[in-house]
Amino acid sequence: MSADVVVVGAGVVGLTTAVCLAEAGLNVRVDSDRPPGETTSAAAGAMWDPYLVEPAHRVEEWGRTTLAELNALSADESTGVQLIEGTHESRVPRPMPEWGSAVEARLCSPGELRQGFVTGWRYRAPLVDMPRYLHYLTERFAQAGGHLRRHRHRTLDEAVREAPVVVNCTGAEARFLAQDTAVRPLRGQLVVMENPGIRSFFCDDTPGAKELTYIYPHSDTVVLGGTAVDGVWDTRLDEDAAREIVRRCVEVEPSLAGARVVGHRVGLRPVRTEVRLAEESRDGTLLLHNYGHGGAGVTLSWGCAREVAERVRGTVGLTL
Image (cartoon, rainbow, N blue to C red; front, side, top):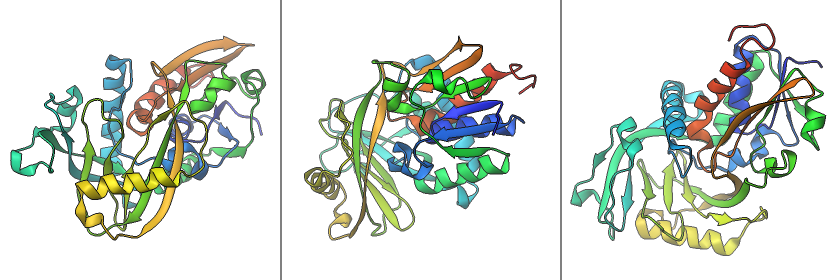
């Protein structure tokens, strides 16, 4: 089928971009070699958290736009988004991150800190059940008239022949498709357990910590993390890493001891020195790039998608 815009990639960044464009009245198709439920996004934790991403001034803007969208979506249970309170804590003294003001974070009292932690901040933010959320975005995209196609583009030169506008949202795969050696994989692994009754999130925010440690509760399950292995493309389960994730999280939250493991997730975060949100003209097609969000794809998704929509304005004769 013909389209005004083809979005390459069906993760959270690609689907959100496609939703924004389709709801503006454009004929949009998403091309992906994997369905949304099999992308790296489906393996994410995930919650609003501007995680190790540059450029800082743009990240703040994109993050605040996305925060407002996710807060609104939390009113609908079907989205998989819920507002939940919890803490980021550090084993060494450190200041609160600048983004804390966006969620009205406050410093923890000594009695609120977990054993071994010396500072922290408490706040309320969107926590996202990614499989449910990706399903919601897929349905919303379809309701706006969008179409998903299972297809792998070998090159961007192939993709730009598909429509007047192409948006590259291929995450870590942009290293090959866009021939961008600045983007690389950061392998992440999570453990999903039955929820023993945990109602608040926790994240170890100690600077320079060798491993990620976080606990994200959903209604019946709790997602435990995690790992961040630089430059590794292997997405097979590492059982030793899984056991270590559980050990660290039980140390922080003893109620997890004995909870049943119900699943494992592995994905490749698309790490780049800076998010690439840029455009170029190729063979008469407007080609936009929207990738390199690292572990902050959910956090920046709506802000970046809205900017892509703004850049497309007028290209196909529509006002977005």
